[in-house]
Picture 1 (cartoon, rainbow, N blue to C red):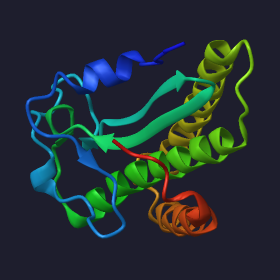
Picture 2: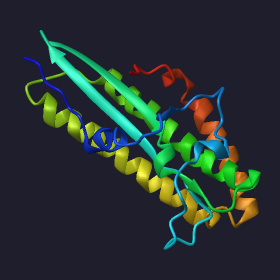
Picture 3: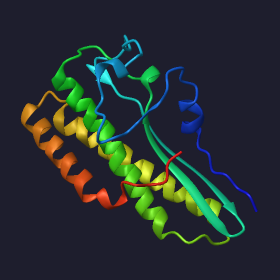
Picture 4: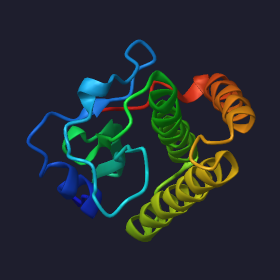
Length: 174
């Protein structure tokens, strides 16, 4: 049996004309990665569009999968392009990386059964929802980086979580 689980976010990310940028500890974001025009209806200083991708293949009772964490330059924009704001946006990309690793951690423990499609969809949905909640908490507690002390504390917390999930950093990628 051959099966694929491809979520709409993968399709959406393929609509970009600029190449997606994969997360890397060796390549922090730069403002040149932000190609979109600022949203005139938004009061935000910047917006970082990240995509947590997951697709799989199940053949001959063997499950293989790929996980991606990318930034879409065509959907990311900056209105106030300062180093401070960029650090906040990097925090969003780093949070997405933490959850790509958590997805890998959960997938590495999964053994496919007869409901594998439903199971995989649920695993992905759970991790995606947790990521969304965490991203919202980051913005809420820092007031989108306006609260400088909270922002500094969050960047430290994110760095600690990246370190704590290092065991899962080598997830299968495209």
